Image (cartoon, rainbow, N blue to C red; front, side, top):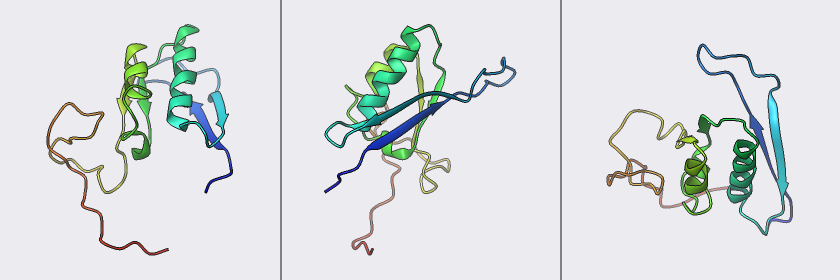
Length: 119
């Protein structure tokens, strides 16, 4: 069981040849374990876009790529975000297209999981 809290921080950086960003941390959200942290973060990003701050690339860890599209990818794409995911070192190299939920293709690039996990 997990009794802690999830903390997510949004940082913004200037795009290539873009204007400087006035502050590094734009939003921070903390959530309890009863709510999906990705869904909570999607709401914060949607609110950010609604306040007039344009979203560009949303670069996330590979843990976000398997979230439910209805609570993560769809709301972000609706407000203009471009999702950049699956940045785990095992999947970061160029390979065939993936069949992950956030991908429109049908070929999986994920490595097969080992049979046993050790702590």
